[in-house]
Image 1: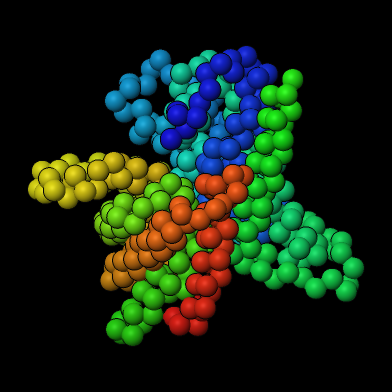
Image 2 (image 1 turned 90 degrees about the vertical axis):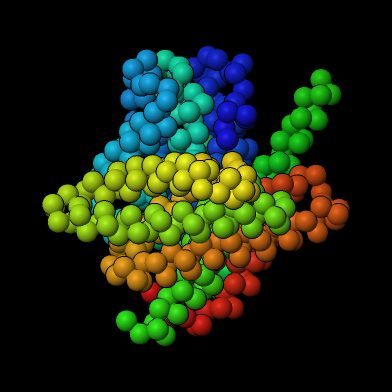
Amino acid sequence: MAEALEELHAETATERLQAGLWRQNPILVQALGMCPTLAVSNTAANALTMGLATAAVLLGSALVISTLRETIPRQVRLASFVLVIATFVTITDMLIEAIAIEMHRALGAFLPLIVANCLILGRIEALASRRSPRLAAMDALGMGAGFICCLLALGAVRELLGQGTLFGIMLLPERFEPWVVMLLPGGGFFALAALVLAFRWVQGHADVVERAR
Amino acid sequence: MIDAELWSLFVNAALVNNFVLAYFLGICPFLGVSSRIDSAARMGVAVTFVMLIASLCAFGLHRMLTLIDARYLELIAFIVVIASTVQLVEMFVRKVSPALFEALGLYLPLITTNCAILAVALFQTQRGYGLLECVVFALGAGVGFTLALVLMAGIREKLALGAVPDAARGVAITLLLAGILSLAFMGFAGVGVET
């Protein structure tokens, strides 16, 4: 999974922080954690909550696991990782239920499903289980931020085109005919495909400039 | 429970609310293992198999945890049980039918991180299905997953011969195709009852 994509030369903490945002962006480059990305990005608010929840779980479990990396036996490491992640997910799930019950209802089963998000297990297996807590935290922050940005961009585009609103505030003129397809599952696939295409295009240009130097 | 209701539950899980195309579950294997039809079909069978077993386990676990009033442990219990079930199934299949084990290969362990399996367990608990309904629901979800995977693999095999722009190769074109498939599957709306 993520091990193959792991570039080990990005060693320093700042580099790790930046890697998640662009060069190794979890969604756009590594195609990890696609399920929640598509499922809850129909409005910007949903997408932001989901992004924050996932990033919080990633940060918490990365810190705990990298602190315990010497104690966890290799044979049962995956089971131990999953246990730690599931604990943090349960905490986050209960927190959101306590703070914003409406949001909890809107996200439904997708909050507990953060456990099965391959982004989290991938990062922990690739980095947090081998490096110091400081580096693991920076990596988790970078990856989490990259994940939130993508999710928010997707959610904003889908909400704006699908309902003409952003965070529930009407932005487009009355005449605007909402693209209902953007709210449907199909629209999620289309929007993400467009985002990946745009990213590849910009990245392709950046590579050309890099090579010309 | 009437047969017609069970049938509509099955159709609903397999077609109307297809796990991959309507709920976006199991997208990772959907993107990863959909380049050839035979491997897609094998993956689908493996997932359906594990879904059935996980669904039965989750049903029992839910009953047990409700009994001792520890619902908050449900998620942790589900994921651990699914992970160990996959391991058990793998050992069992290797012992009983080496041929099937060869056929499933690497896909069995990979299934642990497939969110569609956990979703079957979570959905059936949330909706309060009985034992028979659970089995039918898991079967429907598995068939739907297999169908989506095989359809996509068929399209991608043809696509390998087409001229796709470099930037769109891989993830982007697959997502676009999935979007079109998802719109097509919306045509099934109304065939089963809404849940």
